[in-house]
Amino acid sequence: MQPFRQLDYVRLDDSLSNEEKLARDTVRDWVSERFLPLVAEHFEAGTFPMEVVPELADLGVFGPTIPEEYGGPGLNNVAAGLIYQEMERGDSGLRSFVSVQGGLVMYPIFAYGSEEQKRRWLPLMAKGQAIGCFGLTEPDFGSNPGGMLTTAKKDGTGWVLNGRKMWITNGTVADVAVVWARAEGKIRGFLVEQGTKGFSAPEQKHKWSLRASVTSELVLEDVKVPGSALLPNGEGLKAPLGCLTQARYGIAWGALGAALACFDEGLSYAKQRIVFDKPLAGFQIPQQKLANIATQITLGQLMALHLGRLKDDGKLTPAMVSMGKRNNVHLALETARVVRDLMGANGISLEYQVGRHLCNLESVITYEGTHDIHTLAIGQELTGIQAFR
Ligand code: TGC
Ligand code: FAD
Image (tube, rainbow, N blue to C red; front, side):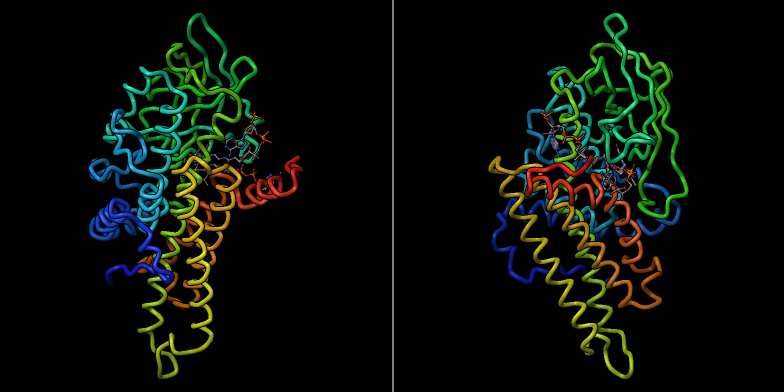
């Protein structure tokens, strides 16, 4: 495989700090040298390479913005975004693993947890010695999590949980699940540890997308947890939605990584592939396709970088993140489709990356709020009228 050459049409690299470039380049090298040689095999087998977890921890990618005091590297949000970009250049399943750990498990413990919960879990999770999952979606409540049926009933000083979650990344391999449940009328988060009686996390098989990622059901049957399992400082639907804002920000960057991988592969293929006695890249239609996707990626890069700077300044809103996630996943999927076509039959071979990214992005456009849910979030921001109901 040729070394990766990142499209940087408008010299955005010039506006990154040395620390941001170092974070990106360290992860980039690891993905190229260590992860890419493994991934096609895992994608075919439908497995995640758990052996790389300690290496990911050494790279500092679990909870990149978590302060050093709690075991994280305390990077800024642009560096974190660049890390997600490089992870997803490897595979959306790799970025998912890292996003769930950092944005959906470490973040709620950091933002809503007690001091004891933070001291216990965050350093372990930063080191990859505990893996987490995030249980919000239910079989009948995906886009509308506010309708959830999972309950938590007070039982002395503890709680009893009942319900079922579905499509949960890392569920089967997780040491701890953040489970969202209706507790005495209000949605609350609970830390449910693997091995707790009545709790199981069977793997969901037969996916043709995000194959190098474990996806699971969470089954809760009279699961008793102590009072200390409750995340004390977040309540209502805005608590889980606040976590989604973190992970969606990471996806706005991550999707660019998948798009950049496809673009680089498509460009080099088009320059080498001879059709009708000259390189494919020398015909007008392929050049138009390359110009279109390069332009969209460049606009997506500008958007992600600007969102990152706003996040570091404390000015980022959920509605802005909706636009970033929606736009950048859409452009990545379009890029993958165009490159798949440019590569002819080779585009469907797992010897190349594009087919894997294309299949993965069909999940990415659905999870963390579907494309249309984000359309409506932007519509609400623009008009002041909610059209979800
Ligand atoms: P709504 O009335 O609009 O909001 C309820 C409260 O939440 C606040 N809020 C947010 N807060 C933070 N971040 C956000 N993004 C927020 N969106 C809304 C809102 O201000 C309100 O606060 P308050 O103080 O008034 O109570 O709620 P709704 O029931 O009308 O729903 C709105 C909607 C549809 C946008 C929301 O439910 C939604 O986002 N649905 C999509 C669900 C989703 O994205 N699920 C993802 C599950 S996790 C996942 O997919 C992980 S994939 C992992 C991987 O990377 O592998
Ligand atoms: P539905 O909500 O049934 O939507 C179906 C269609 O209806 C979509 O096109 C949608 O846009 C449209 N639609 C829905 N409501 C409206 C409306 N009001 N107006 C117009 N159109 C509408 N969840 C977790 O909690 N944790 C995880 O770790 C996690 N990981 C995942 C991993 C993978 C691989 C996948 C595929 C999903 C994962 N999810 C996870 C679940 C994901 O968040 C949901 O699939 C997603 O929120 C959509 O819900 P749904 O599948 O029930 O689709």
